Length: 259
Image (cartoon, rainbow, N blue to C red):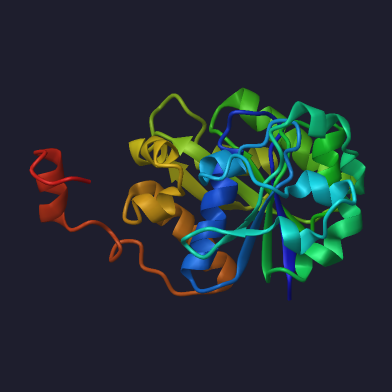
């Protein structure tokens, strides 16, 4: 069944766009057809993350009736499809985010899995993306302010009668300061889909303008995203077998080999 999965959060800066891109890349890793849509019209970043900052036709053109949905789709070299939003302030002033839900069927004609990166927060723009969702994934950090805002997003989803698939916790350091997984689950009362470790490879992938699943496929973060995708797709995936071989890791740390 074709599904629109909206990636949202109660606040900005928690890794929502990074998660949308890498979850899409991870689902594609298992051979599924994926479209990543930048539903963050105010501050779009999907195109920037995937080296397509400016495109001739964007989601903005679709929402304004100037183009059909399939015309705003671009295929990344990895095989995932993306639908960027425009960086233009002029384009932004012409757009009505609430029109997003009118294109739900059109989006589903393009791919089997549609991952939409929503605007941060719970304003009208974010709610327009949420209204489109078949399922929601909440992204948060293991810190009380982020978790409090994630809880607000979950409560809002319940009010809108939207299914919350679960939460992805990013930037996990596994120290004594951050909130522990048991506490996160108890506080949010939704399943934890995965814990994404703090990983320098994520920052490196941003500089390389690609998903960490592509640039550093055996990194801790990439394997964590693939674990989540495997659970969603009921695919077998052994993260330990996908780990970088010990000798190669040692050589990389000794700077005898590039990572």
